[in-house]
Image 1 (cartoon, rainbow, N blue to C red):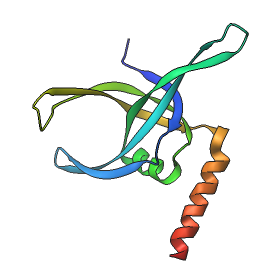
Image 2 (cartoon, one colour; image 1 turned 90 degrees about the horizontal axis):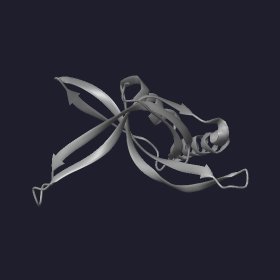
Image 3 (tube, rainbow, N blue to C red; image 1 turned 180 degrees about the vertical axis):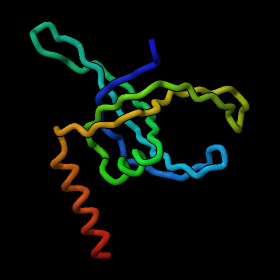
Length: 131
């Protein structure tokens, strides 16, 4: 079975996009921080939230540019991708560190909060034009 993850969550911040060198080639990457919430049956026919996890999500190239253009903090997104483990040594202590990251194949904007996201994007554009 392939390493595949699907989850729905909320963006903790607007996407940050940067250019990085990969094999001598400039590539765009968007870094997203998404809160994936957990739910379970509450015993009364409904569901209750039982916490959740924050996960870093990376989107590359064209999808990175689109995410930076369309997504804003608080947007509800559905992410499809694979989990990767980043490993490094702490610069100060030299201790090994690890963090899970989701390499997204696709990020879908949920229509649940589109109105507020559209309003925020429009307001940001108006503020930039006025300054």
